[in-house]
Length: 324
Image (cartoon, rainbow, N blue to C red):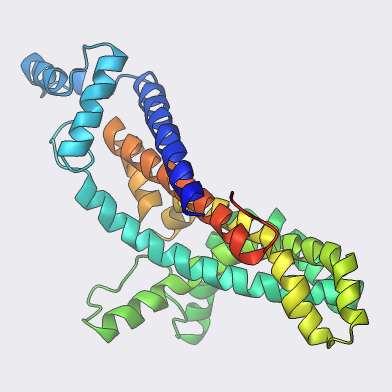
């Protein structure tokens, strides 16, 4: 196992370097980051030239890439284009906010998806199975932005009719959230609607995978053998069937977690959450390529890391998997 992990880490390092070069190249050739600055009447040509010299914008792409890597390593993940601010402090602040949202949502999604998927498989073609199948299809077909907007509208309508504000519809905290426990209670209250919106599509997709994997496992030979030995149905389901049925879901969850960090753009934008999604949108609007590249590298790193975690989890869930 240790040898396998070391080998995968070395491989991942190579992939990350290649990904960084592709990210830098594609973002660089996408347009002129100084286009808006050049046409501004309040900006002199010397100011524009100073930015070009500082960021080496006149150099070939390979040379600019090396300068960018040097800047990223020595200057807190690089610096912004115009005011030369370090990117890492701001990126780390918004990433912590996004992690709070994503972690809570993912834990709840996996928990309910496993329960629904396992019970639907055990009670195949029952009323519960048909009901969950219908809701899953609806959840997968519902656009995230529409669901987020409808959740906000429902809360506003409830407030107008009853005078009771059930949940906040924007921001991560109130104007004066307090400190300590009061702060975290206020934060949790603000995250309820975004978490529910993320859970709808997540549970819909994961529960279908879990149901399909569980149906395949419970009809396998070793499960029938376990029943023939006289083991209780609960033990057969939990120890023999569920453990192996979780393997496809582990792959999906691990690979999705990295992309979800970068995929909450719509949810964070609708709810005005100060996270990675809103950070990415603001960087695009300001036409600053360096925060965009830093954001893309964080997402790429998360995907690589959780891909490795999924591979390691295989060996823990399935004794037949060996990393020799």
